[in-house]
Length: 283
Image (cartoon, rainbow, N blue to C red; front, side, top):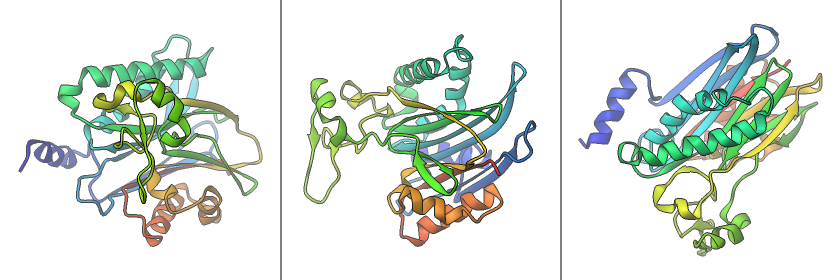
């Protein structure tokens, strides 16, 4: 057995990584109507799980923060696991998080990526996409992402995408300006340097000169019209539109059941990728 496989088995036994599936739930202390649930499923590819979900409420400086994320690794388990352990700490350690949260999150993404590249010998090749959401006192949601894991909000039953899918074809000029190229082979998606199907990611040291880790950031007010938010890896979005995902779970009363239901529907639609989903319910 290869060294990385042994490491994965050890981590799995101490619950550092999900095995075939992982699920959980939680709720806000300041608003009993705000709850979260998450669910992950290992895909049919012949490799260990590379998706990781993060979901928790945390009290910080007399405020309550909901911290939620999906990390989707490619050719890597270690990098998304590193992100799960460090990214939110790096964000909250930014001195101006409370006054300028958007710029603080952008800096923290860059700092985290730099640390991952410094640790490339230990963390290995490959990289990870990420979508993060920080809920401040159940009133304001700050979403950031690099790559194609996605955040979708449902208000009055209508889906709106909060994140941006960073596709190489949409950032072709920027990639070429960095010295890279975007391939468009028949029957395949556009790829950076013929390899990576996203234009932004953490890690990927061999491609980093041509990739960005600068996140898209958006702030959304949570109001009485807000039903729920979905964070999910592309294992869902490859087989469902935003509105289809919302319609799939808008009848579910429990956030954890909603996350599981969404993943099961993706499997029923023949998604073969690893799938991770977090649902944050506001009603």
